[in-house]
Length: 235
Image 1 (cartoon, rainbow, N blue to C red):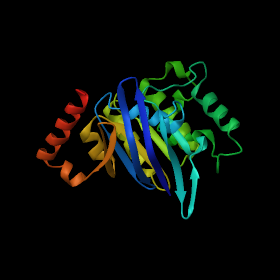
Image 2 (tube, rainbow, N blue to C red):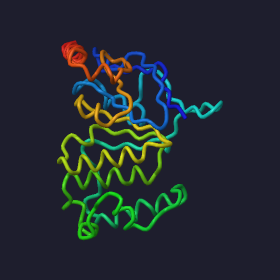
Image 3 (cartoon, rainbow, N blue to C red):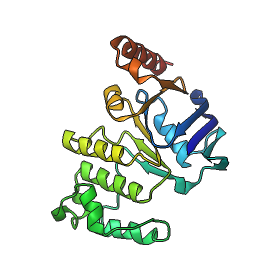
């Protein structure tokens, strides 16, 4: 399976955020979308998810010889700031999600198995979500996206504000789930992208460019990337 962007552009006033983006992502890989804050990573994700409309361009899924337009059910989107219904408990939220998607979720499991998989302690499962930490809310948001089994998982800097232990748990989970789906992980932290991702894609001057990870391991190449991102920030 491939996810293809063709001639995607987006402008806000005088600022061209995305410039005729052409790119193909392959299943089974975690892609690191690397760019400075404000480079357009979230704009790109919002265009893919349909939250905002691109000025031009198309998004396709290619499976074998079959090419089709991207559908909402193809996409799971995990925001940097978790959005959960804080008036529900973790268990109520999970049950509600499973109930409303019962016709599309393949091989549903008991609720506690899902909580176990996300290392959410038994004593926390019946707490209100408003009393969850940022990291726990993030886990719940990640969990429902995983249960839905989307073809494309968009992760908008979800690990940036997590503590070291939770962030490492999330990285291990993402590595274990990458088979059969396309995972695109946006970050402005180069070392995080190198640690987690199979491929690095640079968003610079509104365009996507694949970056050789072997080159990124050299200090000289890192400095070139940083210089390019600084230049982009002053456009």
